[in-house]
Amino acid sequence: MIGLVSGLPPDTLSFVYLVSGILFILGLRKLTHPRTAKQGNLISAAGMALAVGVTVLWFEILSPLILVTALLVGTGIGTWLALSIETTDMPQLVGLFNGFGGGASALVAGAELVDRVGAAGPTSGLTGTVTGAAAVTGLVGAVTFCGSLVAAGKLHGVFEDPIRYPGENGAKVGTLLLAVVVGLALVTQSTLFGLLDVGAWVTPYWVLLAVASLLGVLLVIPIGGADMPVVIALLNACSGLAAASTGFVLNNSVLIIAGTLVGASGIILTVIMCRSMNRSLRNVLFSKYGGPRGTTGEDGADIYEGNVMTTSPEEVVMLLETARRVVIVPGYGMAVGQAQHAVAELARLLEGDGIEVAFGIHPVAGRMPGHMNVLLAEANVPYEQLEALSDINPAFSQTDLVLVTGANDVVNPTAYSGEDSPIAGMPVLNVWEAETVVVNKRSLSPGYAGISNPLFTKDNTLMLFGDARESMQALVNEYKQTHP
Amino acid sequence: MAFIENLTLFILAGFLGYELITKIPATLHTPLISSTNAISGITLIGSVLVAGSGQSTLTTVLGFLAVVLATVNVVGGYLVSHKMLRNFGRRRGD
Image (cartoon, rainbow over all chains, first blue to last red; front, side):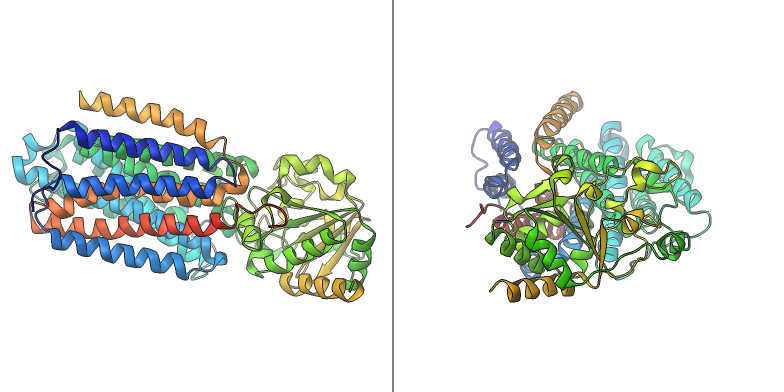
């Protein structure tokens, strides 16, 4: 089948790619405000449709049936996954999609190498630029694909606990070095590497994919749940960079522009997430943070002895009645318990009675950047009520009641006091500055950082023990009873 | 020469991306990840070329797989973002 629009001037294709590049940029600009964000996403999707459409129509398609089948299968799977998913399962779905993009880039670069070798032979078909860009694509793409599959599996609860073993960092570094050596064999196309001769199948590329896949698995399996926002952001960056370097392999402008925009976005988010935990990326990827030590919590038991005050839903409702300003601080526990609807209902009830309600959202609360915001938006909480850490911290001293539900490390004052603490220097929500703090938690067990939380022993802190959804629902029911 | 042109695009797009993304509020970070994720499915156009015009059976098979993966990424990514963003436009009292 000859390309339907191939009669147009040769520059038309590049021009259309430019237009879709502009649409991606405009789409991202609209994402700067919650009200225009939906439109931004649609503009970006239009840019994608345009780029894909012109590509299908422009080139001579030798096997239209295969192409159409693949497009239909992909559309079917994508639509089904997107429509059948619950909001609480969003992090793993986003992780999975990330991986697919990276995987596709890795396959495209490989196929392009094989085609070029088939057409002109190894020496004349492959320049250093092409093999270099393909090596980067293969490495980043395969790490993204396998890393994302592992991350999605963890987020879905297939295997939740970090998998740790002796010599972990040695294995990671060794695998990375091996990948670099195989990459060099591909780039230089040297016969020094023996079995890794390029040949008709471009063997080193596929070996590189295998090693990089292993690296992706090794990098993500030791990482625990609360570090997932960093991993998701990093894999997002990788999927973009893989697409950009595929653009270098294929000499395609829109791939480079779009891929780089995504790469920049992912890198910025990674940096924001790391800063929000006061940890470096290397520390997240290579340290034994929150390992087995985190699950025992033996150091915490004694500081709580006799210093913790418990409360009941009835008492909390009495406190709410007299409050003028209430701040709700949600954490991963709200997502696990799917308590967002009960929390939102409580907020609406309080607002209905003239009480000012805001939500204090820590950047790394939950399992992906912005996780809490998506859950609360789904429960119809208006975005103006969702306040970031820097905006809400100065206002805690004018707050009568803070209700913490399912959060722990992000409200731990040790971040400011203990220099040896694993969370030292991490920006936290200063909830203890409020008149009263009610902490809803299932038990006194430590959070991800594996440390005790002196907040629970403060004189103005009350513990409301129980599952997030049941506790919030109890508050809603109690409030409704007393305020018919 | 093409490499330098590509590098120019890469670097300029990097700076532009930095300027654009730093203006996006934290509340939209999940939809941002999901929407940019769909953009990274742009690799679909490379996959289309390989699947449709592959010179050998091997490249056609690779292209087929790449098109499926990238299409799931693109279609699923935009749909999920749309689903999330529908909830964000509301104002108080809507």
